[in-house]
Image (cartoon, rainbow, N blue to C red; front, side, top):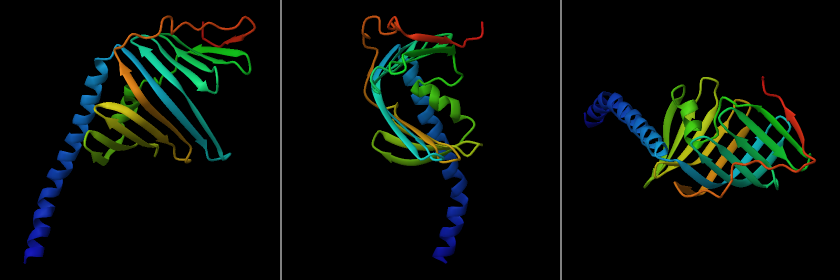
Length: 204
């Protein structure tokens, strides 16, 4: 009788538990957006891992990421000297090895941590994977079967891992995050060597 009663209670409680979990995730998401809305300067160390399963190629990069309300810079220390600068209207990628800079129209997907999660949130199924103190792991599943694992600590995104349906992935990890601190002088100026070949693909 007790087992049967437990089953009945669980059946009755299950919808409530699922709704509570959804509300918890939405609250986590809202608090992340509120936190990032207060940020006018952001600086962090980052590591970036890419894997292309079709050709079995793995690449690891690292560097510093800076942004303010208008511009974003990824300054790589590995590969040394690579830069990616995004402003209001364009994106510039510089590679010192090839001595080339490519300038193109701004991409739809922004690389700011809060914009990454916002891009996928509404369209995805959501699951709370783990929670330890103020650190939460959430999994998103998009309609295209992309899997996204996000780690949030104290309302700041510290990891963002996107795996597509072909098992290719990109993983960003953010550490030593500083918000609303003075950024280095002229950090968003892209000063290129004179012999740089500039390829401008913007629609004019």
